[in-house]
Image (tube, rainbow, N blue to C red; front, top):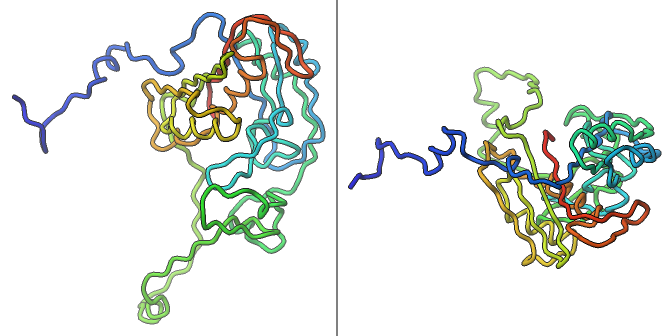
Length: 298
């Protein structure tokens, strides 16, 4: 019997499927009849949303629904509940999703997304932590201290960009400066970075007539997906199934819950998996069985 320990080579159980190309990831499970969703993202880092015109997008071929932030006005977040799945009234970072187009094919969804017109009123931008802490800094959140806290012991400060303060004290810093032979003061800046995985972030969801929900996602946190969908959309947690096929790299980058919300509300927007007439308020009638999918980078 082979022993396992330091210096011993251990073959991973999924290694053969991966090297032969038989491994199946979230984006590989595409079945006939599935719908595709394309997000419309903000091209500005900070701006008021004056209006969103979805008329032309709704009339595009293959489009089943177009949703905006006001269709699902909830606030969510892992520390404080400070942002909706789709921006409402204001965008706070470049690339923030403001609308989602659901269509029969990926091409039709992408084509119609270009016909969603957003009128922005530009606002001052905060480009660094130093700028954010300045007394006269533009406020990213005007009502920061009014948000619900998910994590205990968070103390947001009104009329600032400060969510919380953490003070770390180790040793006698004044003595350290006094006894130093050389003191160098400098400011260092690092460029923006992200986790780089070969598999991009992707999620697929379907809402069923019996109230159950099935989500496939390339996530490191399937139980967090389950808990947050239940909490924010009033779905019984026991009726939510989250499946994570092989995850093609993550490094912490796939622990946040984001696309799962988008896939879920897209499925709800078109009635989920139904075989009877369903009307989404302000939209159209549908008569087919479907689920919704989005695959791509954040």
